[in-house]
Amino acid sequence: MTHPSDPGHSPRPPASGPPGGPYGPPPQQQQPGPVPGPRPGYGTGPYEQPQPWQPPPHDPQQKNLLGALFDTNFDHMVTTQMIKIVYRLALVLITLFALLVAWYGVAFLEWNTTLGLLTLIATPFLWVSQLLTTRMVLEFLINQFKISEYLRAIKDKD
Image 1: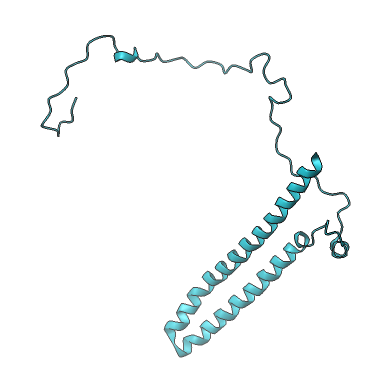
Image 2: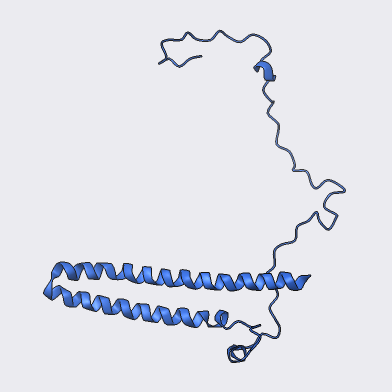
């Protein structure tokens, strides 16, 4: 049938033939039943059941920070061990900078109220944006080292 708002066409004649048109009758509603289990003979081979992903094993000879500093072969990475220290230091410095900006905002209130209010309102956004940028850069850096570790584990696997 055509849409009632389409005045230029007449409605279609009713279809003749089997119910459901040329594609046959509509499917019957099936009653829900038990879910069948695995078929016999499937899932028994070594390639049928996927193994869950496991991170590469850690090196049992993992050196501490001082030992890794004197590793002349660069087998042990220092950056991955120092990244937490760098992030904590950045968190402290960014927070101190935000507190300094807020202090200036309070001082600006006496001189120019609008500038002081804008500075005080912008301080939390400045803190979050600086912390987010630092976190993204450090996550990118650590991701590069993880890729290197995974590639080394793949290479050593063969």
